[in-house]
Length: 232
Image (cartoon, rainbow, N blue to C red; front, side):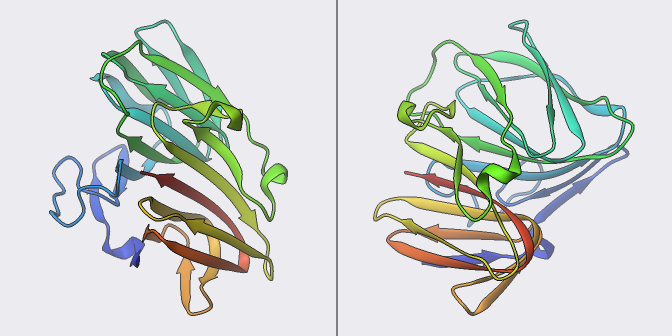
């Protein structure tokens, strides 16, 4: 089953420093039909003004993946971790039994990012944070595993049977993915445009919920950047 969720139909929130769009129920946006997809609970599309951001706040029992689309975000947490994640790169915070953190746009330009929350397989545990560079050239025309619950993937670790993948496709290129029975896929186009299964045009920031078993074929219309979550 495939459910296309257009950017224009997402939940939205805006204040003086944040312009956010929500693929699933979050904060004051509530849609009982969009409470998550498998263990994927949150996919927020955030635009953060320069020299602003999320002040220190707490989380627990959640795997929080941040994919930076443009600009950069600076992370700092109560564990003493601090790091700057640039466009195209990824950071993961495992909240575990509890952690305080801030996410700040210390740049002189807007930062845009996807923030993805996945429920962990078990509650509690030691919190942790990590970041990694993933050059776009390494995922041109193919999937790169950005974060995974499988150690053999050599990606940023998350505590769930799930993968976060990234890819780029040029105009005319084709990319495929199969979501197995009992699993859930969620795809968001970070940039560009593609045709899905030869019939549906997806534009930047559109989302697609996929329930397995289902095979998808992506054809590049204009150079595109894709982020995909596959989870139980």
